[in-house]
Image (cartoon, rainbow, N blue to C red):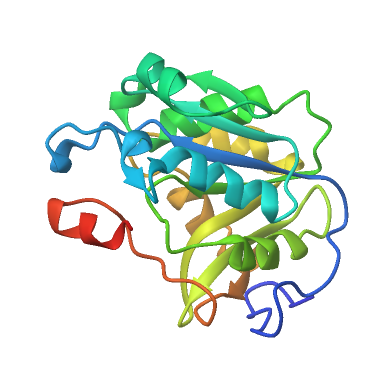
Length: 213
């Protein structure tokens, strides 16, 4: 494993076996304001709702259980997407930003027995199981703190040991998610280089939709 603040390298799809049980948390509540109000979970990707693809990535990377936080058009997402086998919560305050969805998701997983959670975003289809599995492998226990990096720049997914969940939830406000917590604990953060196996683009604008095939 890399030492805190250092890169875990780029070889293979994972540096080893994680220490403990790693859950997956998919934040999929966004309303797609810059996409004309099209909920991101429902964007078409290879003929199916994008939320299905993103949840499958977490499962294929070895996360379990996998929990999804919905928000905008939640009932429509439930009706159109095949989400059997995943936990699902609805964030009524999704419009407040990513922070509220992160809090909802961490609360839902509190009784799961997981030692850590990998958090991913529904609108990053360029990040697949190869990258997520590397971050999963960086789990060193309930105090773990790790994140994917792309050319040395921190990105998603991120991994939080369970001992950190309460503090992360308390600091998660607005659309910043866990950014403030990660900045404050940068010395404990392990960066896992994933730029050779993934692309960390977001689907935010109509121009970005061309990336969805």
